[in-house]
Image 1 (cartoon, protein in one colour):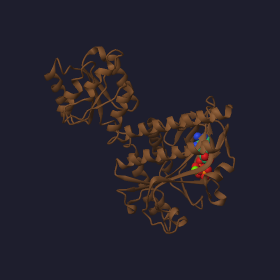
Image 2 (cartoon, protein in one colour):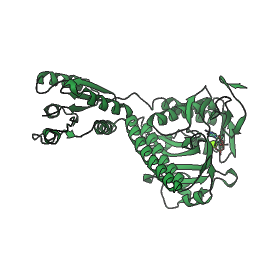
Image 3 (tube, rainbow, N blue to C red):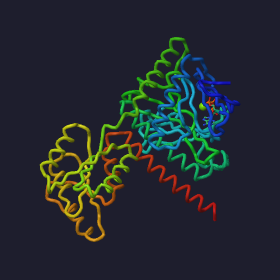
Image 4 (tube, rainbow, N blue to C red):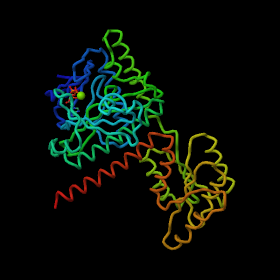
Length: 422
Ligand SMILES: Nc1ncnc2c1ncn2[C@@H]1O[C@H](COP(=O)(O)OP(=O)(O)OP(=O)(O)O)[C@@H](O)[C@H]1O
Ligand SMILES: [Mg+2]
């Protein structure tokens, strides 16, 4: 059988809202096809909704593209067609991971006394065991561990729970920031994980769409655009279903705007082309954070007016910019830029073994009124620039956050392996 241009093999599993197929020839990939079906309350309420599969697929694919490009490890490979996507096959972990920024819904019932609107910082996490018959009971981390669940090669223990817990918060924060850029409040969210039998990695899996979150435009509950509208319907009329569908379409339309090209950049000024290799390292580190980076050669000592002209040109373009000054020996460049620009300047002098300890003072000891900062490695310069630009650019911010997450997971996995190898 062929679906949207892909020859599929056996059905791996069929659920309420999608079907998973094997793809012959690529054993570790599967095709996920969405259905034109909307359900709520563990399937007690269910309706056909023509067009929902396409809307859900568009939403999920845009969200996973955003998460993949941020650096979160997910099962998503590509959108295949209108209602399908290709993903890594996963052995699913039957736990729903819920994150909440604002208290609402079932949290209020389970925590009487807490008023709707209570804000959680850090976001509140809850875990539910996926068991439709028992209405997905809430489980503590201890219950999740004691259940000795297995997925692929992994036993779900403390390490796995910790990784999923931290990843869940990061995913929430990334999506919360993305939605905030369109003046929408992400109130809460549900995600699931699987284990790749190929690599043993824990991957964010399943789907993230209007079924997975509460989304309140302008933070106003009355404007909600998520499945809650369907859950709250007293009578499900064709007209009401159409409103739900139009909300979902509204979301699918907006998600395509969640990964804008960066409106930010770093500009590296070098006093001499002999520092090119050092500057190239800064540029390539900037790239990993999605920060466009330009290199310029200009000496504040030997071509002062030209340096100021170039500075004025960048400031005049209106793109938020961090300047990075690379000058050996006496760093006149960074302080001159800093004295004439209102945007941030970071000194990143190439340190030499002979005079480095003395030269650094020309970057550190500044006339009054100057506020340039100094770092001593190209990576640190790029990181500092990305952190400044990430203040207003959620895509850059997400890459920074995901990098921290992946470093943390790497350490956790290394520690687990060290202990297992003992
Ligand atoms: N990458 C993947 N590899 C294999 N199975 C997956 C993957 N991503 C999601 N699935 C599984 O696809 C199945 C079908 O999804 P669907 O959401 O329709 O199920 P469901 O009826 O809602 O059941 P559930 O309550 O388990 O979500 C689910 O069991 C889900 O865990
Ligand atoms: Mg499901």
